[in-house]
Length: 353
Image (tube, rainbow, N blue to C red; front, side):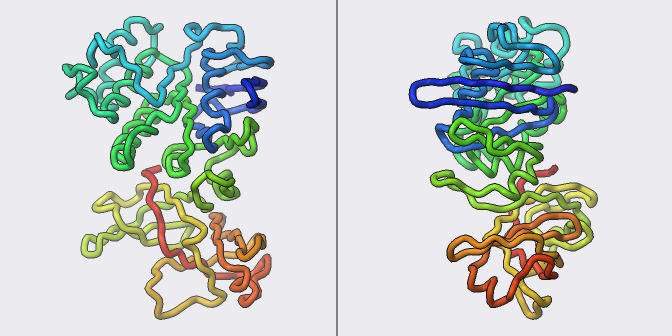
């Protein structure tokens, strides 16, 4: 899919006002991130045609959708609740979507395979777990042959374990069928796992839009957002140790060791999230430490804020972020341009990139 989703929208509802101007590439996954009440769901409803803006336009790949009713917009939607037809069963829900879809789009068999829906086809929707129902809802949306998917916190009602289990299905399906998607969430972990780029929405305004790594690198939590500052990086698997259950990764020519990859083949690219508070700083390479991940870097920015100090580092083109006390930064006399060592205490494996 080529082109852009171009938004120029103004909408007021009660005391809340939304004003969004953005051009989003019609490819990959764009995460729409922000706290509750930021306007994320309202934005998706305006794009889908479920609500009309007070002013503005929605254009997708050169086509003006502004005055089209929702049923004439080639967008598939998945909501927080699955909204399956209770009288049709799993197979009936999928068939209903396919029979009413235009030509093209993913084949029914491919959707069933990508989302592992085969074992569910004979089930009644009332017997499905929350995760199973959302997989069926996603399959139904894909079978409408959408040119754009709008996913409004589809896994918000699932517990953490079920969410972790279902996210790979979504990531695989979106990649396999090459359908651009807007994925709404207030979870920074979901953004790290899925998003190619991120739009940050706060109080109805776009405060950031760009590649996921670049946006997350500079993202600081607003009150009540409940996430921690950090970065997302990609690294390549070099080898695994079955003895210790560790994997050695290449991060821009330096070695990073993480647990949990098992016997995965070398060469695999993985996506990692590193929280700023999990990065310590040394001015000399440390010895006799249990921290295995020591990365050479250059300090490219220092920003003091109260008792703390945020540091941005460049490690052969990969950016890292550290948050230490301002006292520690002053004792180490940290300055822009200085060569330092980043001691990474914890790494979160978010996904296979």
